[in-house]
Length: 361
Image (cartoon, rainbow, N blue to C red; front, side, top):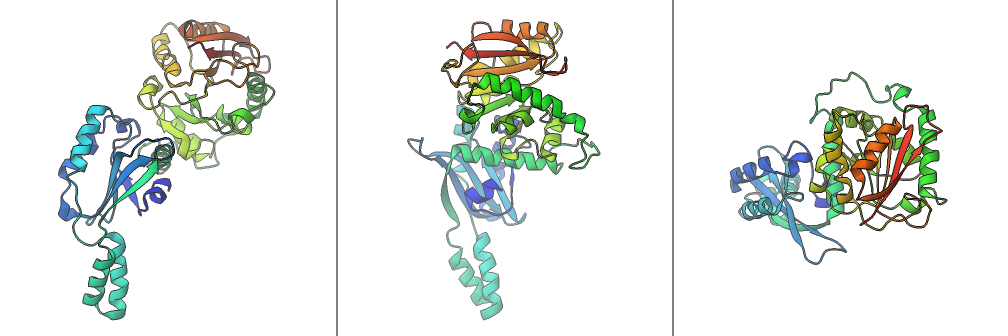
């Protein structure tokens, strides 16, 4: 897994039960208070660095638990300032005692060849570096955390979907070819003549991704967004089918987007974003008002219309009716210069109406 490679560790577990819980890090702080040196064989202090960072920032600590026989990774990388202070104070108290994971294994091998005691001493010498530091790129670390929770979903560590389906068994109705082709045509028009080429390496986000019914069209245009949805079972389906990507998928209430992402995305997509009625308008209003907070500003470029061109700070949302599209436009009025279009390629329900817009600010 990505985190194992980044940190140079073996099997591991993250402390929090979900990515969303990484915000409050309640369990992380609780467990850190209970760490004892005699239980820890090795410690790795994790710092965020990379080309865009001015100085290193402590974002985590990994400990090898002697009794459990695997690594435990504690991190505060999405926490607020107050919790980060608590984390740094507790992490500073953690130390290691005894042979490290690698040293102990080498010691066992040496023991077989040259005698148990001599091999043990050699192992201790090799494992003297019981505490070390690693510097990682923040973005790659986040991808590693996302991957951990995605794999955990599929393995039913973090959900009990009990769906009864196996990988490859989802009915084709989940990903109808006709819908994918219709979306690709609409998206190509939105993106301009360059199709998805200008967004191939850009950071994009899809809210309310579900099992990835609309994500397929983006992937076929070489656009690979971070995909978010509050429904863990829907995300789990998409992951099992190979439609959603483990390093780019997250179970998250999209009304909290700005708590986990900065102004980092070029475009935000949303397909069939919800049945917008007077009864659930407030729920979707909270989600949609988060969107400009995670978008780069920059307007709509030169592709014509409110949503055309290759500029950053754009949105593309689909709904099933003109009335719903009007609600989206009303909610986003003042934040986006937007327009409503009928998608004549649709089946009359799925993605029948489109709202496209570009950030005003």
